[in-house]
Image (cartoon, rainbow, N blue to C red; front, side, top):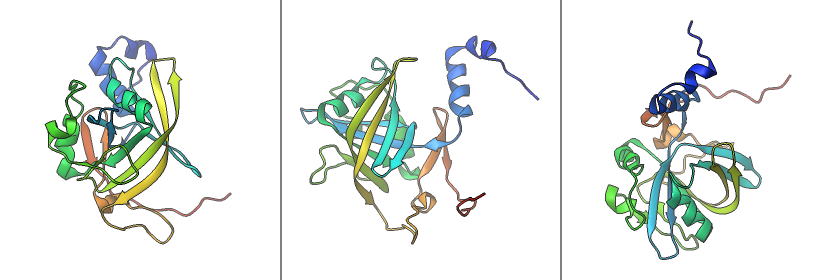
Length: 203
């Protein structure tokens, strides 16, 4: 058995420590967030920190890194109040991962990685046309996390687009059937596979 104390972790090299902690927290949803600024410049960035906040109203959150490290997505959301979340599947994985590169503000990641912005009526931000599961959100709240200068961004789901209607009779969406993938750490991606659905637990 291996035991690691906090003092040891704090002494590790920066990227080694980040890789360890990011993978320690487990498998996460892999998504592209699509935004646009007030001048119409599109932006696309990969995020794995998506959080279910609540179902009624339908609220989803994500963690935005400090502004100095990841400024464009947050600035666009603040300016327009609109953004999209787009699931990643294996056919667009390499393009999606490339959006994590630090392109200048005037460069669209859509163009650089060869993904297609999809605009629909009533939604200001672009979807990723190639994504199988995508949804638009309207900004509800941005909560600063002072411990590390990050932000919890909370949005309300306004529209959902599915490439195929795979919703079950009880409302469950089987992500594996639409090829959504998961990620672990900063650069490892996994196929999703259902193990088992269990009934509602009661005492």
